[in-house]
Amino acid sequence: MAVFCKESMVMFLLVASFSISYCSSATRLKKIHHSAKDNGNLRFLVVGDWGRKGDYNQSVVAFQMGRIGEKLDIDFVVSTGDNFYTNGLTGEDDRNFLESFSNVYKAKSLQTLWYTVLGNHDYRGDALAQLSPYLRKIDSRWICLRSFIINAAEIAEIFMVDTTPFVKEYFVETEHTYDWRNVMPQKTYTQNVLNDLENALSESTAKWKIVVGHHAIRSVGHHGDTNELVERLLPILRAYDVDLYMNGHDHCLEHISDTESPIQFLTSGAGSKAWRGDVKGLNNEEMKFFYDGQGFMSVQLTPTHVEIEFYDVFGKVLHRWSRSKHLLHSII
Image 1: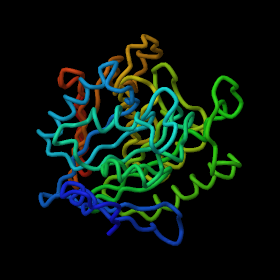
Image 2: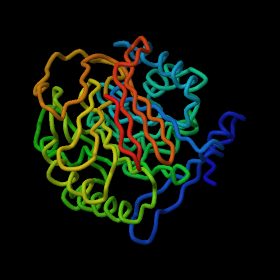
Image 3: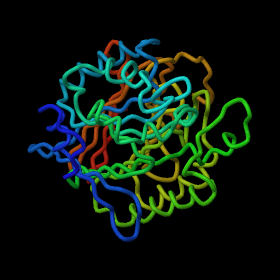
Image 4: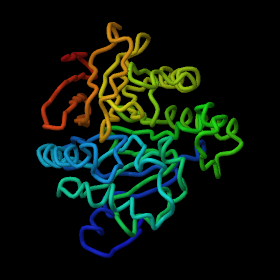
């Protein structure tokens, strides 16, 4: 078991619910084994683009997450990145970690592990600070690595992918400075990420394969499709029968179906500032749902069934979709 801190019984229980190992000799991705509940179900929340010290309805979204989390008895939370605005953390002791995370997500149901990827705004600060084990001593819920795997009792494997280094414009723009330590050279780093992901997907025997990144592959929101991911990541997801791709980046909630595979593209990037009003392509037949406001998403899995729900700041279900592995059935 991986024990980072035992400062309280709550902290001990969080640590004891997972362990970390290397996936296999074929991949360098770390695998976190998260114990599932006795009922064989897996339930978690997904939220992104949130860290604004409670402002822009972040605290309101957090309250509803706590309520839904209690109702569903969630196992953990997945963050799709852009965890701290506007420019990430300044270091391990930046109070923004407490003010935007620990002091906001205070509900009892949210006192569980948070599995987190970095977003582009996180790379504008001290990216290594968010990856540091020191933050787990401040708040034991925090699990942030660049790319890694969550293995949830063979019901699902969730492949967390560091997508920011794939986006070429970040390496040429002059308006912002990015923390590319341990990322350069970019071409080598991103190819290694893809190789590791492909190896891990090829070895996976999970009933559900879910990939999470900060950037969208398909989106009708402000940023739209991420061309680098369409060209380099999407073919791998299709080849290895990935079921769901989840992301943030666009500050909205949306659901798009792939045209060439069963993959569902799910955006949950509405944890705080939203309402951009910049939307394109809503008449696309693959577009199942779009909401420009704040909210979050829940995922409920059994070995044969998945159900996705999107919620607004009032906790109202805006969209529900489900699928069974053997008898394909969806509710739109």
